[in-house]
Length: 415
Image (cartoon, rainbow, N blue to C red; front, side, top):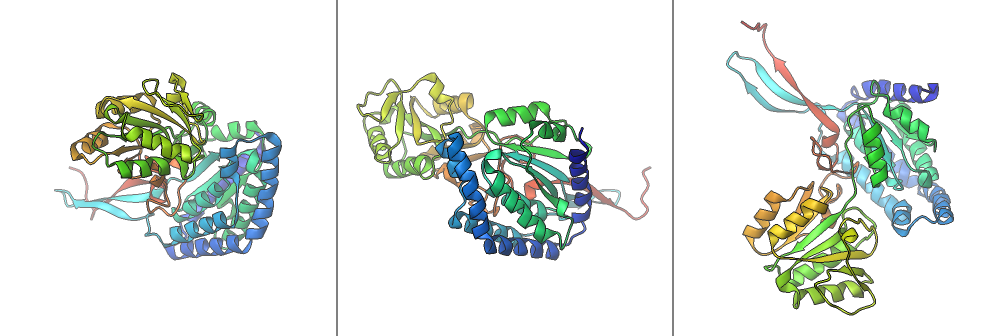
């Protein structure tokens, strides 16, 4: 274990003990200063990002990953707005709930407290640095951020700007961005359970699998988004077309875009051709169920591999199903516990889908693109947890806390 990595983790642990004493007003002030600092330095951020984009082109990074990497003025504005929104959110840390008095006269309640030190390992998205730093400060946690080498320059400048702001209030080590490309550094951090309380991997299958297998501390996995939409025989046709097109094409390289469309077999000759035509007009490549015959250069026959593929591209698999139970069964086999949607005017069908599908967010007649922290009122998110623990779905400030019992008595002793 290298001294520098151990010191980094130790510093994070010490910082986590200091930030808990920073009151809500001061934490809000820190976040507002952070938002202003980022906006004032947007040109510097974009210049650093250009270096990352040049490297991405050099190594042939795919279009989805390159899109996630890009920071323009609009996206920086989005990050700034997210930080401001987090600053204005109600307090979570040290709030109490479920208070009651027992027969002995003890007051018993639950208190939300920070997780402590969070290790975040992620790919491509430099905005993760800002979102996670802001949420960590809001929830009184310390955080260590390890991004991919493709975002090295963007992550570094964002980390430096954030540290410049927070150092006037709390230790700089409350937010640390790790620039090293050395895999051994990650291995060392994953073994430091005495300093790091939880690790969150956010990225592709190999990253999540590696962290899950090697971490000594608890893991909250943010796995791939193999998302489905089921079009029921009772679906409103106009709504269905709009929902499919939005959920697939509004932004193709993101984890809450649909990858497989499940269509009730009764719609094979009526609604399905209209959906396919609308997608083809958007340049979507279709992997179509062999039971359906359509002739177009964008259409290929689907294989079993397609049902298990997260494309992160303008490609969509389409399968016919016999009913909602068949759709639920398919999702159970291939879904990634991320975002699933049912499109139907039948309350019975929607309720069956809601009660049977295992996913962190289930949509009823709404695009899967809404499964996002900013859209769901969290301001921003660490990511979307697909691990069924206290945090399942988008992780905001509340999901970065745990809870403990507080027992208040007046000299009570147990008889």
